[in-house]
Image (tube, rainbow, N blue to C red):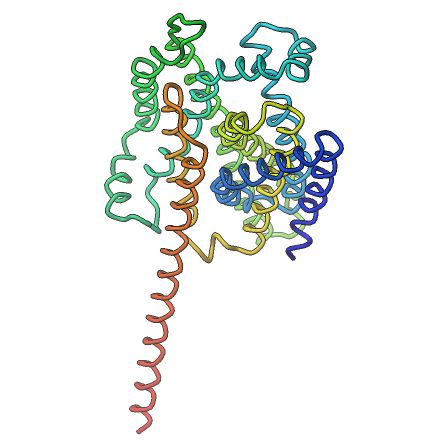
Length: 382
């Protein structure tokens, strides 16, 4: 099971490390290894959240997520995205941006750093909306019940998460962004950039999340209708229509996953510059890490880990909320990647331990109930 799920990750690791040695020698090998570990540690919460979405897809779309999705994640977000950001922010052509990334690494790193407020605002708002929509939803299973019960009641107010996200964006833009960067000794006001990028992140979330939710609801309606028709007459079912709707629902959930992964990868891409400004080594290291995150996502789905440890999804969403806040704060203040990674790991670890305690308590209660039933049967027999 492990080899089947992580086989591609092992193969990509081997190829990536060999390529690193050929490109940058043993120093390149070390850089790629460190970047891979960095990406995995920063994105573990991503895997848990992805698993909650991916478990709704069939095996075909899980394979798409592991193949085409990896190409988008590795080549799109870890290689193309940093170059595109530089091209847009510096108003360069794509060929010039690539040449800059390969031949003038220091200047390239400066340009990416200058583009950080826009990147952080977009990703921060997207992740913040995921967190807010999660905590404002009334759930049967609650982890931090003292907090989640009142938040669920507040969630009945329409558009509350959007209002809070916009307030956070305004506060960020006019407190952090106005003093975000000193470029060439001159004051640079990034408030407008942060506002536009943050609104773009909010709109992206609403469009992609709305479409995936719409087609998921349509899929459920079609399955219910098909089930009713099959009960009346087996030959009157509509398997082709149901498959088509399943495809649309899965496609938009896949699209949602890719945008989600993009938002998660922002901190990894920016943080990678603390280790290297070589775009090739960066793509290799982050790409290997991204592959493991995807394999871990599928592993969690196939093992049913989220069903066994019910608070894991809660912990991952709290980690998303923390990462959203961290991204917004980094518009002005530098926060070490180790802190970012540890926050996510600690929250998920806490939720895992809480799940284990819950499972033990339920098992103990069930054991007591069975023992009580047995005693009752014995006394009745007597």
